[in-house]
Length: 244
Ligand code: 1GP
Image (cartoon, rainbow, N blue to C red; front, side):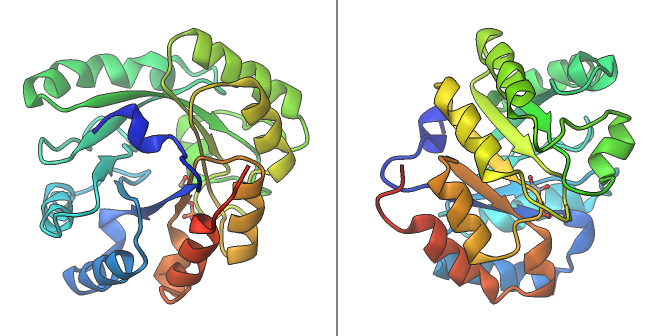
């Protein structure tokens, strides 16, 4: 798996976020089935809190379906598995908390090397989603205001100049509002690397607006826990042709 997997061709791509702590084997199998039908492009696996030993088990279950790549989206440095296809090596560049900029990464790096896990360096940028999210609480960082695209652009540019291969614009899981399409558009105008957008995407309309704004990959999590049937509609919106 390479960075090219994240680059939009004609259409944007869709990732389903699986938090191992929120699934039973039964709900996981249901979601895998729906994701295969909906032609989802990636599974992202991770959670904000310490995941118990179901993390490895969840990655294994996801890998059994043999089609959709499994990417670790780690909430902390315990969330590692050699079975995954890649790891998003996140650095929280919107924050000023050294622990999440580089501290956790230093602790995890020798294990990642030992596991021969493929890493994709990712500039992780929190954007205000209308409420305090677990990510901003746990990392003790302040998100960038959603109506300040210039700050998001400067942050994304710095990430790109530092060599990051992906930019991830995150409103936070369960955000009341998504990252604004205007902000996504502004960032896309300035950076060359693929841009992932997640947090609070609950409808095909919201997915459509973010793809039109230029998002390369959208991530959905929460909404599928309550309304898994929405996955097909959201996927159709993301995969509709001729996006900018
Ligand atoms: C991934 O945290 C998001 O970037 C997922 O957010 O759970 O709100 O879809 P939701």
